[in-house]
Length: 308
Image (tube, rainbow, N blue to C red):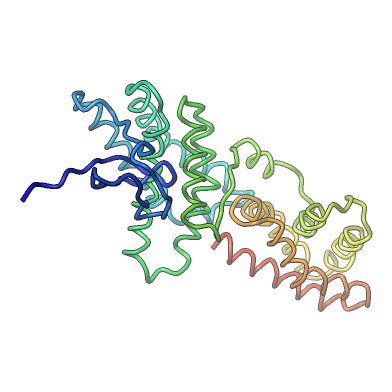
């Protein structure tokens, strides 16, 4: 019996390695279902004669997932007091990985797309395997996504290497193809860090983000009412100043996570319907203690969802 001939390459859509019977003219990727022809297989690889270059690329690609799995729990550090030193520690621990990947990809010459795609797919494959092995840990995938969006992607872009921008764009594209209901968006370190450095308005920061998402001005009636509530009733409560300081620390991080780790319009709409609209109604009708309780619950719930 004649041995069947196969051709190998990578799917141009999801980046997975495929091994296809050579006799086929059309076939489907077994991972993402994309219909392909043999000519569409991405077959560019590092020169096989250069074993050292192949090993360097494989080693760098294998370390990418560790830039997430070795830093689990860092979603808790997305606060005004902790983010900048936490990012500096993260960058010190992970910048060398993307540096090695950049060196290996650049050494290959030619079109880098196939290699960058292969590395990004390997990172997501390794993360998926980790989630499978730790299936009892709830929300692990969501927590890792936050680390990717707030630490990994900004770190890669901050290095400003030849592969930096292409790699994060491919990584995001592959993630969205695999997990379309749980997207993340590309951020950068300066924007995130500067957001924590600004003098925010404590209690009103989340409310401001919701109103801005709806196109309302900073002096709209709603924001004016919440600021008056904060500066009057809440600040006069025994625990009021402490609550305001707490919100000042964590609210910017919550908003950064919403903007980069979810679908912001839907998230802000849900926050309005569940929390802010009832709070505003409480203020308008003099139920200030109830408004305080609702707002505290909102912040606690969002903190648990994004930062815990």
